[in-house]
Image 1 (cartoon, rainbow, N blue to C red):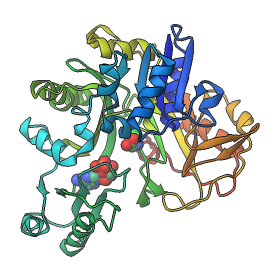
Image 2 (cartoon, rainbow, N blue to C red):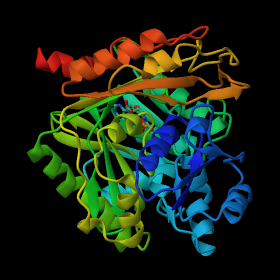
Image 3 (cartoon, rainbow, N blue to C red):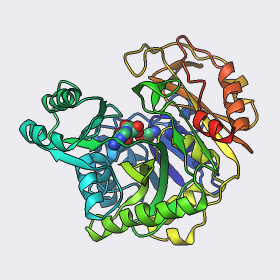
Image 4 (cartoon, rainbow, N blue to C red):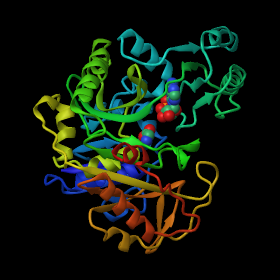
Length: 425
Ligand code: AMP
Ligand code: GLY
């Protein structure tokens, strides 16, 4: 089989790594890929904002299977466009990806289907918002409706700050693009879990649960990022809680989308807050998480390609996903300044020594090749991911590998897994 992967981050590097392990795969093409992915797949340039350009790559490459990594091509309708041309493609249609593309859509959907989520108000005008805000108590969460790469959520300590944030979103001052809808939301307290499932439109197969670390600073401080590290363990959710989430959240979501005529096929990423009143949906993503995928796929023993094909063919109920018991951890290294402005183009060294640490895989997020030298090429640059029988051991391996890697301004959090470690103490 020839597999095409669309995307250029650490998630796509991990997907390419997992696809390469499939006995059925003979060729992997990644568009556009990055310096690290180029070591295991052929990379071809493409603009992920340009639907026609992506379809053109598929026309030329004629893949047997295409996997769409990021949200942007999904929101543009890459799956619809490729399906129309007869390609087999893994990912939701544009209509199904609305669960991620519009937070207003997602909140109303959750309410229609009685799926637990924070109380909210969707507002289309500033005066409407000023009236609605009176039913919320501070802290108030203010959210942009559309895709915002993690920058569209503002947790506001007071009503006044919430009003300012909402005005900033409506006017375009905060995100560049003016928002047509702004969501006010009740603040939820608890631990966050990334609960990812495969869905074929009818059946749901959960992946190993993970916990992301979204803030830049240790102790979960500072601004939000795309994700600075993640771990996955058997004990993150016990069997009863996993079943509860499947029964009350994941399955009703997939059934609801099917009932509404927009069946969801692909990865349903459910961002959960584990609150005192039970798990509540914070958000949906319509794709694999980054860096969750790096940690999750390290634990996947079954063939990823078989599972993705079963999703496309509607026979996910016949697939059993097997996971390596124990844990995995992934530590992300970023450029100095990220998530604000940062410089790129610095040489990366120590990669081969790092990759020799047992159980470790290095996944690149933003790297580029200049001759034989790998250079930094993004905010998040790369991640060291490791699997081991215990979380302590997985973290030790990932940090041992990270200690070997150098580039100017390298930054990584030293406390990945801190919540889980505290629980086991
Ligand atoms: P989202 O893009 O909706 O996942 O939000 C980004 C981050 O903001 C989440 O991962 C949470 O840490 C935080 N967040 C979002 N909604 C809430 C909420 N209602 N209460 C508390 N924190 C939230
Ligand atoms: N790690 C969070 C995300 O992929 O959206």
